[in-house]
Amino acid sequence: MAALIGRKIGMTRVFDEAGAAIPVTVVEAGPCPVTQVKTTERDGYQAVQLGFGEQKASRATRAEVGHAAGAGVEHAPRVLREFKISGDESFELGQQVTVEVFAPGDSVKVTGTSKGRGFQGVVKRHGFAGRPSSHGHPMSRTPGSMGPGTDPSRVIKGKKLPGRMGGHRVTVRNLEIVKVDAERNLLFVKGALPGTRNSYLFIAK
Figure 1 (cartoon, helix red, strand yellow):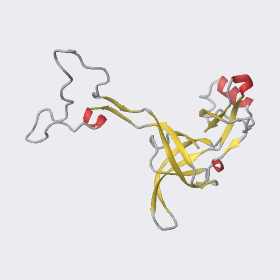
Figure 2: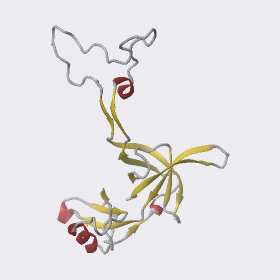
Figure 3: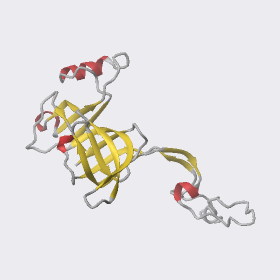
Figure 4: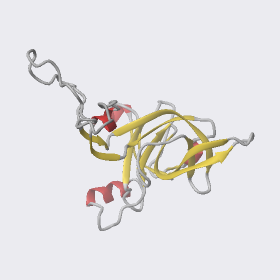
């Protein structure tokens, strides 16, 4: 299993050997302690639970503190996430998983929560072209006709309408690891990743 929990730092660029600029997102990933190991015999499937960050002692519940202590982790992790593993992989409680599980050139998928945009109209939310925008048109950004008036005399389910935009769980696949900085626990992933700065990301090979 090559998977980690990380925190989005921001975007920058790196240069390859030919001098071409590559846009990358910098992610502070790990080290992630193993807080639980699930087996087929006991749980019906194989998985490993990783933690990331540290909670303040005053904010962690007794259950969270006890769960971390059972794995030999001093502080309760701020984020917990489970990743499935194959049968030939073995992990121990308290084991630290670092960015060294990845290498430049690896293809990964990244899951996060997209930026919340608030309540938006159909032009921004769904990419509608809008009505004529010249000469002070009074309805230049309205959605237009809602459907037939006589039959069915209602708005059909699934109609694209204004509403709350963003703030959803998003997974981006087939992203390339450009650089791995093991000393600073940093991953440089090609392209843009979902979420704001300091938001949490789940990276899996």
